[in-house]
Image (cartoon, rainbow, N blue to C red; front, side):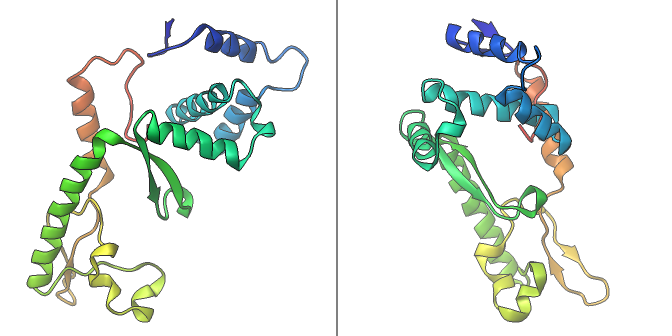
Length: 205
């Protein structure tokens, strides 16, 4: 069955129907509680839909067991399935939304393009260093504790600006990350080139 832009099994359709019938004098179901929690934190509807889909996939992978009955072993089993069977890898995002670290999925098809991109970023950084720049602004004054860290390649932005910024007072130059609107425009242009029945996606989803 095709609904909302992706295929659903009969089992999933029944599950969704049960969730929609949750408010009949009984306590709210799992996905309803998840939606309420996300909305109270002002997450976008796209993010809400994505989180709910991943929760449903996790539940169905374990034969519709309630997450309250599962723990680390079941989570590791699901992640192993994604990595081995569906060729999905993990990537760790440091200091992301809400200043928190998070683990997200990295599709196998992106591994080679990402490696090639990082090679190009390293070449840009090496050129900046050769011109006596190539230093980033460090968080929490870490450059005082680690004075060589700002020039270390491991601290550079994965998606740096095309042009260096310049401090008119000190003459210092460097690169920040690309502005988010550049990515948003790129995603919109990509969406226009294909037909996506579930609606207009955003960079966050």
